[in-house]
Every structure is written in structure tokens, then in C-alpha cells.
Length: 186
Image (cartoon, rainbow, N blue to C red; front, side, top):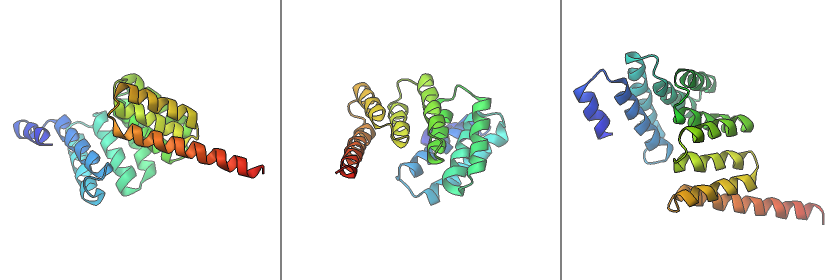
């Protein structure tokens, strides 16, 4: 965050610096380092400032979409912002990655998988994007495919903790579904 703030100190008209700060606030709230109640107003303020400086910055529309989805609970605004972000910058991996979060939560699993795959095409070495593709398969109840994706992620980075966590969940749920199906027919 300090580097983005330093950048803003040198150039107060840098929309990317404001958006970078917004993304830092997103991460702090999303991953539980700070309360979303404290971080998302900061996300919105930084994203709005970035858009004030450059309304065509897809990255800032993505940040605003995250605030709309996770803080305002305005899902139609979130989807509009995600779509606008992708229209403005179709090669911004995080727009596809975070839009997939939205689609998964909305139960639109096929679209979520497609957006995650697009994010992965754009940033194939990101452990986050790799693992979260598995997460999309997990929510689509494609547990074997999810497990395969988590294992691919761990081949890339054996120390990436979320992939271990997600892999364990997928194995446990696959086992639970198998036990349930077995119990139905006894």
C-alpha cells in the first residue's frame, strides 16, 4: 500500500495508483486481515477517484464491482461493473477472476468456469487463479475436475496453502457424496 501511496504523492493524477490502493483494500477485507466494514469504503473511495481521473480504466471498474458485490450487496451494479471492466480491458485477468467469483455465487457455474479459464489464459502462472479455477469446479460439483486442478496448482507451487485447503475440502466432499449415495441404496 505504501508504494501506491508514494506514487500518489508523486503524481496525484495517477488513476492506476488509486486503483492499486483499492485492490490492496480489497485483499485486506476479502482475506480477513481487516474488517470488510472498514476496508470496502476505502475500496470505493479509491476506485471512484481512479474513475474520476480515467473513466475508461477497466481495473477501477473491477474494484468498484467488488465493492458493489461484497459490501453494498448490489449484485446488478456489480455485474454491470464487471462487464464494463471486461469490455474496457478484456486482457485484465483479475476482472475475469473476480467476475467468476460473482458468477459462482450467483449459481452460474458454467459461466464462472469459463471466466476462470479466461483469467488463467491471461495469467497462467498465478497460483490464485489456478486454485480458484478448481474452486469454480468445486461449486459446480465437478469434484474430480476440481481435485485435478488443485493438484496442478500444487505442482506449480507446493507451498500455496489455499490449494491444500481446497484440495482437502474437495476430497472430503467427494467422500461424503459417495457415502450418501451408498446409504441411499442400502
